[in-house]
Length: 70
Image 1 (spheres, helix red, strand yellow):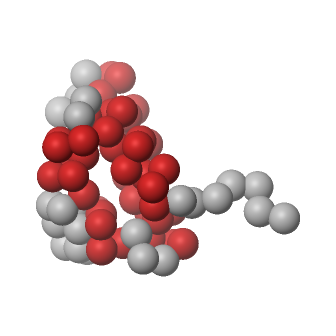
Image 2 (image 1 turned 60 degrees about the vertical axis):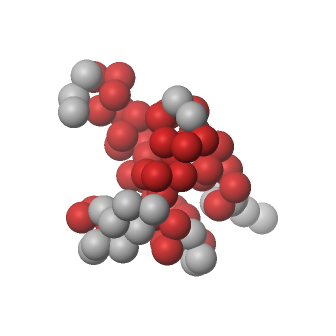
Image 3 (image 1 turned 90 degrees about the horizontal axis):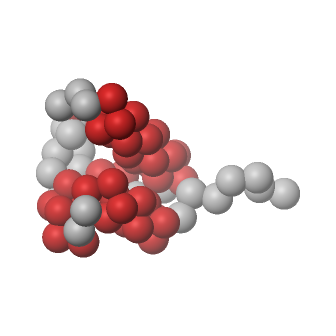
């Protein structure tokens, strides 16, 4: 039994919530990230491990936004 499923569609919804719109979320997903070795978050969504890494990055972004860190 899996306790936590890493669903790519859930990632898009999370990005939308954090960034305020689907357009901003789509742009974020298509921009290469240093934290992902230069790959885009969307590229990472093809594997469970990649989805987890993107989810972790979004969680970090959420924490930074709450703390007012740019």
